[in-house]
Image (cartoon, rainbow, N blue to C red; front, side, top):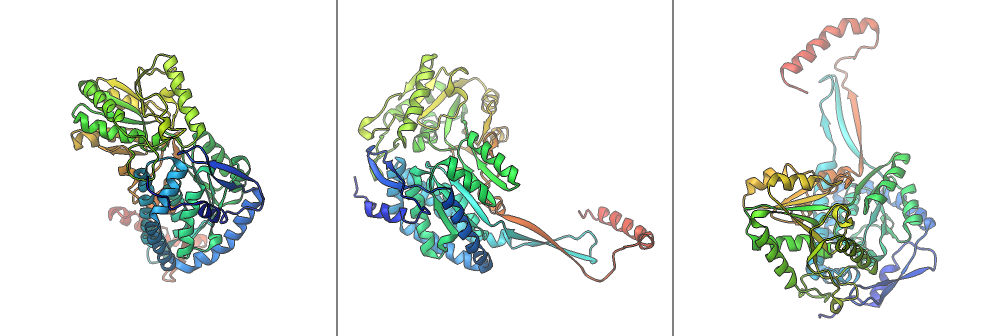
Length: 516
């Protein structure tokens, strides 16, 4: 295993950047050993209020600085993220337990998001002329005003990429950010933030807090002008309720029970390789990873055999290099959750095709990639989001049956289709009820398309990140109209009487010209 660029001195330096006023700390363990990696200070509600107050002052100057200044700063941050990739990769692995390759996806995504928003913000948000109700008599323009201070609540599982996908467009739009980092991902987020600060983002403009959801998360939602949350549907509902009472906006990426359709025209070996990664990247601890596989009967035996062989020959490890195919679950709680769902399923008649056991040589919470079949609706794994190391496999007779089974879920975050025909894949994709659909890929096609919106349908969330839609979250449109003086609009009954015929003629002319 290569030597790490991270060290206790780095951890201590990074946590010094947290907004915290107390002395309370909690130990954070690394999945590779189960031993304490560092002591994380805890923020409180007063720290949140202080961070928001300072962020409001910093935001005024940042917004006035303009698009060109923000673009220069963010592009400089992009370069620093790439330069510091080894340090970022080490921190991601040490905190999350994922492989280096899967960590690299995060670093690459953070850089891509930064570059995209730096270069796109002015085009999307500079404002545009709109057609006035009475051409030549009035002019109308829409401008965009930053919403102010954005609260971002980020989970541990993809700390770098998820932080970037919410924080960077907010900064590009002229907003400030106060971010609540999950304890298990705080070092990664703080290291990412430091690159932006050194590139020129004012320190108060992007503040990071930690602490309990009940105190710190609640205080954040009480204080900010917009909320971004990634996490469970249950918590998302509570945040949405509070945001609704305050009449502020929120974007929520929530749970998923994502399905993969394996159609009968696939190459079984290739499909098995794609399915293995789609299910067990980050050990399934990814909002868009696959948990349900529906395979058509004509290829089911060959696909299943290839999938089992692929998983059983894979290397599960936590080394800080590129030797591992799959990593570890992130915490003891995650391991307990996986084992509880597996025990429930097996007790009720599910069959373990592969996996179903710990891999202690890879770490205390490492678990073999597990595939179940004979899964029935009375099992928790059937409909609940497992979020780790377990996927289910069902055989279907027809394409239509696979589509209906996929859509028969309360969730609709991501779906995937494996097929030998792109045309067929497009047709099936259009029938699926999900915010994103990948053809011949599990999740990375849509997840990495930073110019396209990402979000969920049904109970998988509201709002979108990435693309122009991701930027427009953070601004309020303001319509400005001006009278040109060419003609005075009517104000009295007599003036209306004299101009009604002209307005009717205008309406009919615009209709004939197909003008909106």
